[in-house]
Structure formats: structure tokens, C-alpha cells
Image 1 (cartoon, rainbow, N blue to C red):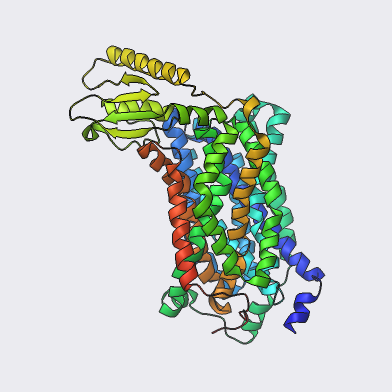
Image 2: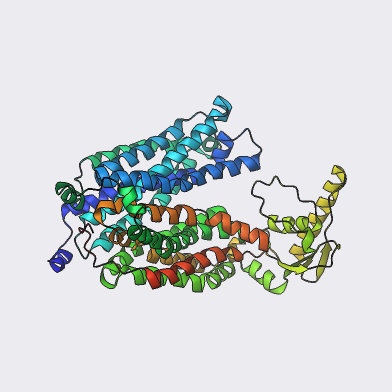
Length: 552
């Protein structure tokens, strides 16, 4: 019977289920990423009462707030999904997401209503994060419970493409609007258009979802009177289920999340910040790699029905651990060969008394460094130059050695403002001149970028994303019984992706800022993916043959 179900073609109802669930989830990701893509403009519109640096950081913190609350949305809406049904729960989540996005598009800015503008904006971001926390688990559960045995990986893998497609759709709408009305008009009022037009996507998604039926597994369970009356206590208050939730987090979703964010976000950040590739070109390279890689979500989801979910996810984590350093080194050689040549030929070394070196993470740009060590490192970080650290004699000023040129730093503490400004200008000029003489480029030369190799490398990183992400929905669904499935699977997914993954750029940036080496930020995803590989391999059980209609 299972073989026959797996062999038959997809029915019209199943196609509708996948299309409706995927369309709604694409729409939710579109809404979620619009904000991130427009963070710089939103900072000027809603946080203009602050200085430019702090305004941008507060805008990013509002973006991060959406990630941080996702697990709470998973708990709240997951509970609803297990109590009242999958269909109505993700109707609610899509309405919350869609209306929040539309309101951002019409929300008066700081200049119009003052501090109320950023407060309302943050509340809307929190609502979006809560809705997304409920949406994914509901959609994945709904599709999996409609899928015939032996095809759950293939069916749910369509849901896995939606985050990538939503990101691409948001970038396309922004680019189209920018091109149509011009940069000045877009910065003034045109940025609102992508938010406002989302109401059309909302209307289509809600219309389609209203016509859908409840999932067979939930309907059967409800008819038998076996729905959970307390899914939260069953999911997290009983050790037999809580231990599976914990294993799902550390043995699956944490590693999946860092590989996902490394392949689709950190690679872009690395190219624009560390390798100084033009932002528009970098976006195009990433977009091409996403187009190439997206079909592999379906491929690995389908393959997981045959050979299992676990081997594919673990292989993706292991490949990330083993290949991230050489892959990102190859990306440097392909995207900015002049930088790679300069780093090989003329290393940069900061020699300083460790006692006068502070923690270099300064996201708002408001901390004033005054020691010679901090000033030296800040200048190099501002120029996105990798350097090595060497111990200097106690009490001696720091120096920067670029090739054979040694440049002494200075201490700004106690200096009059005019003198400090003069010394700062002289020091920065000396460092810039030495870097130029040593062959360090101020930006990547487009004529020397190996476009084909860059796209191939980025496509490989996306391929790893598809390996860990394609089968994950089916596996999470299969780990938990129907009565508490939506609650139990949503939390580890959103803890992994919202916290482990969402914090990757910030954590990696802090590591790079502290150590000086532009590759050291990779240690964060490598360690987390390594942890997931070990724990997942040893303790997580294969699930592809599980009967998801069982309630025990």
C-alpha cells in the first residue's frame, strides 16, 4: 500500500496543498526580508532622531527582534495548531504578517509623528517575527500530513525553497521599483511601494488558503477525540518528548541554520565587506547561485525519501566543517585576486602591548578608542584589512607592519581635539599609503573578478544549504506524534534558525573584529555545524519510515 502511494502521481488536491502552503510561506519570507533589504533607508525614515551610525544599528536591532521572537511565535501558534487545527492557525499567521507589512508601508516616519514611529515599527517587526514563528511549522506539518508515505521528503522540500524564493522576490520588487522611479524618489517615498503591494499577495494567499481542507492526520485525530488539551506541557513538560526537542535543536536545526545563513547571507557580507566587491555585482552573483541551487532543495528532499533524511543533513554539516576555510579562501582568490596576492606577499602585523588592547567590537561607531593598540586596529578594521597580532614590550606604543614598512601608532588620550584630529589624519594617510604600496586594493577590480569561479563557489555554498535544509521539514515532522507535532517541531526549528542562524552575522563580525583575521568569523558556523554532526550522528534516529499518523 505504501509502495503504491509512493509510485502514484501527485493528485490535484496534493498539488493545491503544496502550492497554497508554499505561496503563503514565500509571501511571509518576502515580507520578512523586505525590512532587512531596506534597513539603511528605514534607519533614516524612522530613527532619524539618532546619529547615522546608531540609527542604522537600531534599525538592524529591530530586524533582529523579528528573529529573536520567532521561537515564541512557534510556541504560541504551534499550540494553536495542535488544538484547533493546522489550516486555521496558518490563516491567522499569514493575516498578521500581511497586515503588519502593509502598515509599515503606510506608517508615518519620525519627522511626522516623532518617537511613536520607531516604537510602532518595532511592534510591527515583533508581530512579523511571531507570525513567521507560527507559519513555518504549520505549513510544513500541513504539507507532510497530506503527503503519501514515501514522498514526505519530496513534498515538504517545496516548503524549503520558500525562504530563498521570498528573498529573491523581495530583491526583485525593490530593484524594479528603484529602477522605475529613480534612487532619489525611492529613498524619499518609493521604499513604501514594496510594502504596500504586499497586500495583493496577502489577498491571493488568504483566498487560496480559505478553500483548503484540514490535514487528514489532524482531522482523523480530531474525529477520534485524541487532540491534545495541553500541547505545551506534553511537548516540554515530559522528558520523553523534551529530550527529542533538545536533540532536534542541537543535533539538527542548529547546524542546518548556520550552514543556511553562511551560504545565503554571510557569503554576501564577506564579499562586500572583506573582499570589497561592488554591492550590486555581489547581489547578482548571489542571485545567480540561488537560481542554480534552488532545484537541489527538491532533489535532496526527494532523495531523502529513498536513502534517509539523516545521511544527507549530516553530510552537509560535515562538508561545511571540512571545506569552509578553503572555499572562502578560493572566493577571495576569485573575487579579489589583488587582495589575495597582497596578503600572501605583504602580511600586515600589529605589534602591541596586550594590556592596552580593548575588545574591538564597536557596531555603533560611538566608542572612542584612545590607546595606540586600539587606534591601530580600528584603522585596519575600517579599511577591511586582515592582520596578525604580535606581542609588544610593556609600555611601548603599537606599530603596524605592512610588508617591510613599519608605522608607529599614537595614543590619543589627553590630546587636545585639534592635535588628535591632525595625528589621526596623518596616521590614516601613512597606513593607506603603505597599503597601496604593498598592493592592497581599496576595492575589487571588476576586470579581474573571475565571475564564473565566483558563481561556482557561491553555488557550492548554496548546494550545502540545500543538503541540510531540503530534508529538514520532513524529518522534524516525523520526530513527533500528531497530537503535539506542530508545537514540538516549531520550537527547535525557530530556536535553531532564529537564534543560532540569526546571530551568525553579528557573532562572526565580532570574532573578525577581535582577531583581525577576516576568515576567523567562519569558526562560528564550523563549530556549530561540527556539534550538530557529532550529536546528530550519534543520537538522532532516522525517521523516513515513521508512521506519522501514530499518536504515541
